[in-house]
Image (cartoon, rainbow, N blue to C red; front, top):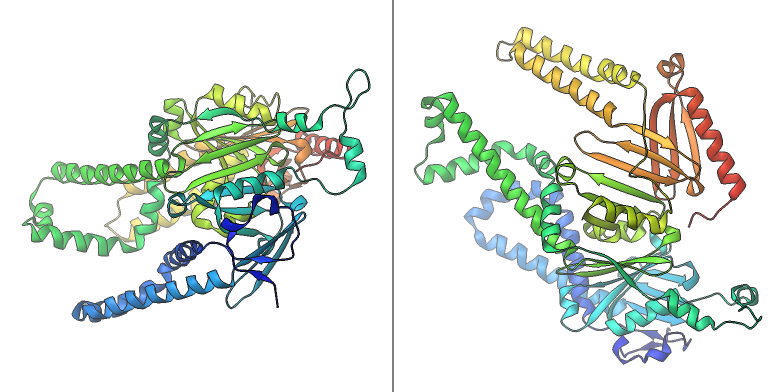
Amino acid sequence: MDNITQSSAKQQPMSDIDVDDNSWHRVSPLAILYFIEKLFLGLLNNIFYMLPMFIVLWDEIKANPWIAAGIIGLIITLITIFAIWSFFVFRYRLSDGTVEVKSGIFAKKHVNLPFNRIQNVKIEQPFYYRLFDYSSMAFDSGGSLNQEARLIALPLAFAKELQQEINAFKPANPMTDVESTSFDEDGNPTNSQSANSNASVETVENTRSIGDLVLHGITSNRIYIILAAAAPFVNDIFEFFGDKLEGFGVDIQSHIDNDPMWQISIYAISLFLLVIGIMTILSIIGAIIMFYGYTLSRTEDKYIRRSGLITKHEVSVPFSRIQIAIMKQDFLDILFGRINLRLDQLNAQIANANVSQSGTNKLIVPSVFAYECRDIIAHVFPEHGLHEVAFKAISTRFIIRYISFFVVPITGILSYIAYHNEGLSAWVVLVISGLLTAIVYGRWCRWGYQYNDAYIYIRKGLLGRDRYCLPITKIQRITYSQSLFMRKNKLVSLKIYLASGSYTIPMIDEDHAKRVYNYVLYKVESEAKAWM
């Protein structure tokens, strides 16, 4: 049986971080709150699959409210039981250069993660930990999700020292010590401790004010996603609000039958603006919760992002691990002259482990000006030139292809419906067809690409504009493809694979595509630089 120490991390002395005492430690009972939150969020993520049951039982629940109270009480009881059980089975062990974690009730999980495989250490402080100065730690090795580890309910000071221990860890290799030794002009070895100290000095690169976050919430409002998600329930929503308004003496049907069309249009526009206003307020609140107190700090070799109102997050990302720089601008961002900068690393397993907080694991700098964005990228990709690059347009065959394969068939179907159904006007068909054509043309206008000795650039979007900077030496694979239509017109689509994902340049000249393809292969093979 494992030797389990009953003391929590709070009683573990700091000097024991790198000492192999072969003992398993339990964390603080505050971990129960973490497991309650995790189980509750898991329940919310699966609430959609439970809706049919509630719909079937809705009449029964309304007639007998005690049924709903019983169900809620049972759920709370089960969540509490499983949270306490999870706390008792959770334990960890820190040895010289390794963190081990055992967890799981029914599916037992034992993770053994050497320090030298850990690529990113993230410290989180949910509000229920901040009250007691505790935190949790997530370790990302860039491997599979089953090989990731998380330590919970640790004293904040202990977590920060462990983070420093992991970041400073060097494998026991004599050659490493020789190669890392530096000498002064007289041939005397320099003080390596001083060099390491300089490397860990932080410089605040960027901060975000409340005004910046409000602007980010306005420009990044995703109302269309919420409206699309609510589409299946439109009839129920209208019936619900219709019943409520009738209860206040407002007869909507009477207004529709008796009021002039211009007045009904004003009502509809006002209602739409009200919905947009509510969604914008919710978006602003979300931006403040996620990015409150935002600071982006820089050391010699990494960026450190700290932010969060309810839960404080600290993400440390080495420059070498960043794969791509993305400048994202929605229509309002372009109008206000702001840019949302995103620096993507390897596929983040931590983000996948907690989808509800995936945005907090990315290195995002919200609503910055162009000069701020340029300077931040320059520390990772020197002389990137993403702001000044002259993009080369893709082929106009892109327009012909999408009009032929999408706009024409949809227009044909709508025309057939309009011909056999007097309720659909030919003008509506023309407006929809024109709108679809404008979307295809707008997409073509945004598409662009370019490359130089060090980088490949991609631009795309519709009303907004996204620009990508891909370092050629970090490319893992590049492929090109041709359909029969493209082959006849000597066009090629390139697909570029990085550790952060894949990126496509569609329908460009075949000869030019082959030059890009051959240059990328030459650059990657001749320089053979590490991509992480």
